[in-house]
Image 1 (tube, rainbow, N blue to C red):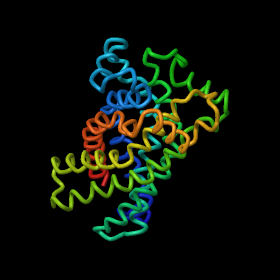
Image 2: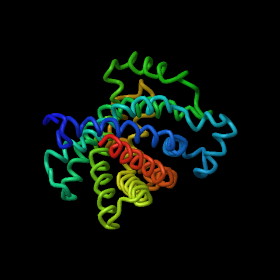
Image 3: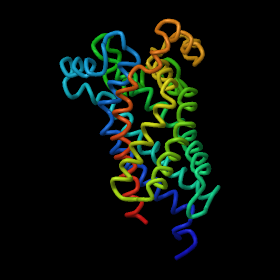
Length: 285
């Protein structure tokens, strides 16, 4: 076996991480899409609903099952490069900075943060399209017929740069959250001293819950910015402007709008994601 093909080769590590990330990420996105739709609607049109259950009830009554999966195509397609970057670069970076059989938890955090930073440039456009489609809930005039129409209308106003609407809050959210994500996942496995299926599911679900809870206020701001119409004034796209506006108009509770739904979503989604990620890594290794 050549050096390039050896199990410790950066190229092999990246390739395995790419494939495993695609499988795990795709499964997780499909499981979590209904929860994500409710979360975005509560964050942006919360005044129309008394809570997640009523939001789910209205969605079912007005749009049926399809309403919960609005915007699914965008993150599902985007999950291929996104999860390839996250898991592929995480493994490659970790091997580069700490090649020990049992890397330090601090190294795991830094590798996860770097991976989250890189994937933000891919996830921002897909999240933008997803959010724009998710808020078409019957309370507002329908602007887009689907993902391609959404892309066309956004780029018609701002060009390709328009697809990076919400990039800064995405960078701030994902750079930190993915560091926490991988840190918690590995820390729980070490604490339980087990790699059994129940442990992997519990560690993955817990990592998702903790990482989402910590950065949730920034996710609220990101959702608000990414659901602005393409012709919204430039100052409304600023994090500081939206943070002040939301706090003044709605109080601090707006920064936890939809958090319960997100936590409910985070556990099964990330349990499934990490389970299939590890399963694929083991199969390919």
